Length: 169
Image (cartoon, rainbow, N blue to C red):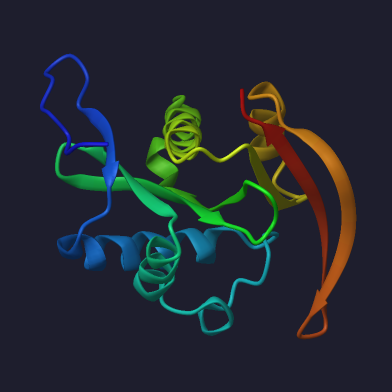
């Protein structure tokens, strides 16, 4: 995937994150966590620094993409290789609330799926809390199927979580 090219009819593009994105990534990550009260563990100290997470998954053969509106990052997401046969995990998806309900989350996920295909992964897995109904509906529209459901208890709080997967063709 290459850098964004400016297109006056479409200011949005996806591109791999780069070193200069750290401040924008951290700000969007903190905002996203603060607004998603029903999502999985909203404590940044539990997950760690998003730029460290990105570096680790890129070192492992994954990728983190930024969704940009011109130079501004309005969303990001990642794929992370798993130890399973040809599987990659889709995660760290965050979209600024001003950009939601405009098809941009779908666009970001599709770019990540294309990235997974280009890296020869065979399957994409994810987990999502049941409170994230819009995300679940989008995953289903993209062909993901539910493979399980589990309640995780972290720091005394329960998170009802769906596991989903998509076999890449």
